[in-house]
Image 1 (cartoon, rainbow, N blue to C red):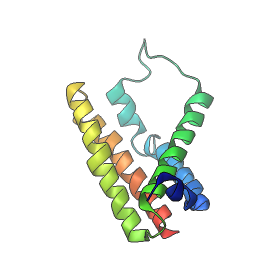
Image 2 (cartoon, helix red, strand yellow; image 1 turned 135 degrees about the vertical axis):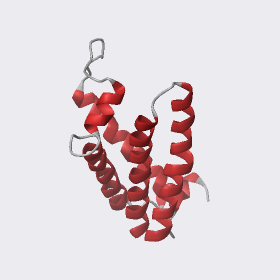
Image 3 (cartoon, helix red, strand yellow; image 1 turned 180 degrees about the horizontal axis):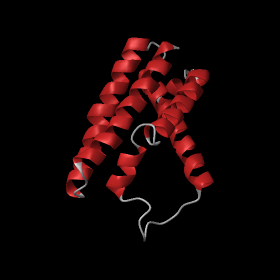
Length: 137
C-alpha cells in the first residue's frame, strides 16, 4: 500500500483518542503517583546545573509528537486492524523497536537499568494502548 492510500484510510477520531490517551498515560507514568520520583532520582533532576525548560513548549511539542506517532501507527496498522492485532502490534513496536533502541542507547550512555525500565516500560504501554485504540476502531 502506498503512503497516500494509507494516509487517506486513517480513522482520525481513533488517532485523536490514541494521542490523548498516550499523553495522559505519560502524565500519570511520570507523576509522583507512579514513577516520577524514581525517574527524577535516576536522572538527578532538580540538581544544580539541570536546565529549566519552557513547559508550554515541552508539553505542546510532546503532544504533537504523540500525534505523529498515532498517525504513523494508524498507517502501519491499516484499516483492517482489530483490537487484538492493534494491541499486539503496539506491544511489538514498544518492546522490539523502542525498547531495543533505548536499551542500546542506555547501555552506551551507562544509564541505569531502573531508568531503562521506567522509560522503556512507558513506551511499551504507550504503543500497546495506542495500537489497541486504533485497532478497535
